[in-house]
Amino acid sequence: MNQKPNFLFFFSDQHRGDWMPYEEEVKKRLGVEGLELRLPHIRSLMDRGTAFSCAISPAPVCAPARACLASGRRYRNCRVYQNNVNYDPALPNFYGTLKEHGYFVTGTGKFDLNKADLEWGDGFHELLQRMGFSEAYDSEGKMDTIWAAMQDRPGPYGQMLESVGWLEAHKDDMMNRGGKDIPTPLPEEYYADNWIGEKSRRLIAGLPKHQPWFMQINFSGPHDPWDVTIPMKEAMKDRRFPEAADCHFPEQNQGVRQNYAAMIENIDRHIGLCIEELERQGMLENTILIYGADHGELMGDHGMYGKSKPEQGSIHIPLVIDASRFDGKKGCCNQTPVELQDLTATILDYAGIEPEYKLESCSLRPVLEGKTERVRDYGISELITPNREGLLKSFGAVTDGDWKLIMKAGEPDRLYRLSKDPFECQDLAGEYPEEAERMRKGFLDRGEKMNPAIALYLKSFVTPQPKA
Image 1: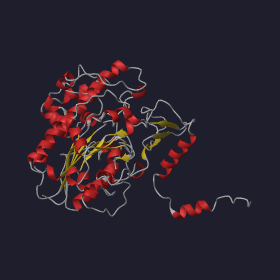
Image 2: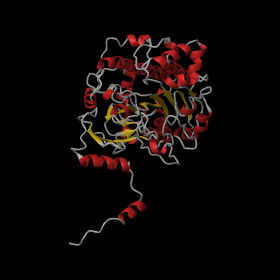
Image 3: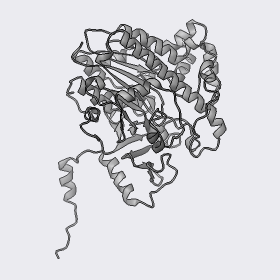
Image 4: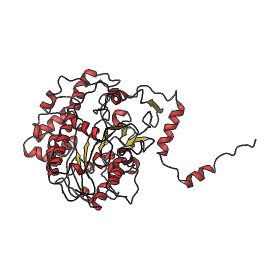
């Protein structure tokens, strides 16, 4: 057995944080009473480890969120501000740091670190090599499969579909389905997450047994469009899910919610199969297991779909860490704010590595071991877009797990009490200005101490008080 732990990280795309198999008390607090998801393997991770029910995406867009994770930095410092920018390999990242300290670093599926190029080569492209991966099998996400194929340069997944004669049918389906909940024409074995799961199990079977390793499995679901296979669709036909908040098309939304649940349950199935393979290889007892997502999905809340918004459906993510084989507590649910990039410091901490570069990431190890309840006072999510006329608007959002403030330029700030209003239907900014100001300060300070020189400079401008 290695002295250092292995890490197997299951990373989904667009899984909202309240659609998880929480206990009833937690589901009630999150406003999803009656939500029944059949996720036995994710639930097993929760039973053996810690679930973070207030985990936040630092930026609810694929490439920026994943850049925050790679660098261990918040959005403003990750150098990837939208999906049209590649990760800068000059910026240190935890993958390369692990490799420098003796880890074998690998992964499968949609990394989204070179998303701007729509170029994956054979799956182990130059960017991943420069970032320090030992090997990888990177592939395109759902719509990137289509964009790349339309430019006659399909990625690894598109190449596979082309080789078996299914690429054109898949392109036609994805380009014309919009928000429909119809099943994909693809056979089971060619469905993206099934293909990623099969590739992942093969890679697990070949992982080194005498060297510590890190492996990241990047699923393409439950990202829109809502494509599911025929058996996945059939399994959902008699199931009904909680309706979206403030949604004017509840019946139409039910079909989409069924497909969304089907994608999450399919991911859970592959998690189970991968863990079985890990156990078959005799490496489970030396491995920390993680499940998370890059950002959420509004799923009809307030009449909206997608991400890129400051509402909870978009920025709230699932996060579960099973470190029970390394003194982690079992069956815990932590309700304090954490951020996606906190995984960076956590993984390096368990690997026994002190990075020589700055992180804006807090190790969750003290929480996992029951030594503390909280590592952050606030969770922050934000987005910067230069196109003022476009669909996306710059925003800042901050929460302490109870209160949440949303800030947008040119609009009044909005304040919500998530513990009583989890879907942000009642703006309390006018009623509780002191809470709004406290949250605004938390967003600006970001939990950091002010530079002493700046503090001294500001102090010099304080107006002297008259003597009594």
